[in-house]
Image (cartoon, helix red, strand yellow):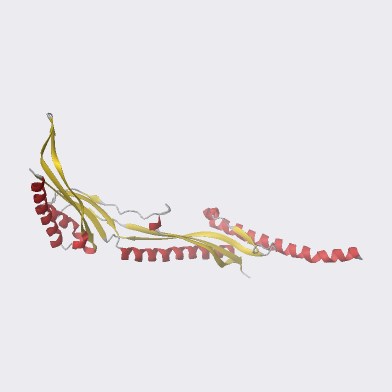
Length: 277
């Protein structure tokens, strides 16, 4: 009689194990079917989750990491370049006074063209001996004074850059360096928010399509990681705008091409799918 009781006691356990094995096999079959339907997406690591770590064998779902990407392109609304003035004199004071006079005319030209005073910043000043070198050697002939300013144009003034630069050269600027492009802080924030929304929408759309292929539904989200362009990381960094500057002093000034700035947000989300009951 005791042998009969042992046999009866084992029947429910065998039955439960059989049900669990069948359920696991069903989920695996659905995963393999979806991977076959997705073709090249088979590199996506599908992970079968069983239970909550309690060892009861219950099928919790399939865990799938999905990447969403949001990219926004925009013409820059901020441009910077450098203008310089070099003057020479017999003494440091003479070179400096002449430089101040010419640099003052250059700044006045910038202001007359609508450049805000806060966007004109002195970047470098110096007074050095002026050396002349030839076949007989080097000798000092007076002094040279140098003054460099960084100029920032915003919004509609960017399209006026050729004229602004040309007028500054006419006023006495002897050096022109640049240009480089960027976004204002407010613009960058709006761009970031738009790219973030697009990245999450991209991940959600991919997750919904995978769930459809698997004949499953999204159960929950287990992990989210977000990478913004300014955070670096080397995934999809923000590209600097391409610029073409051709030296020249035509009536319209040197042509300036602003290009586009690309801002990208990447989200990595781990979804858990479960069979549709």
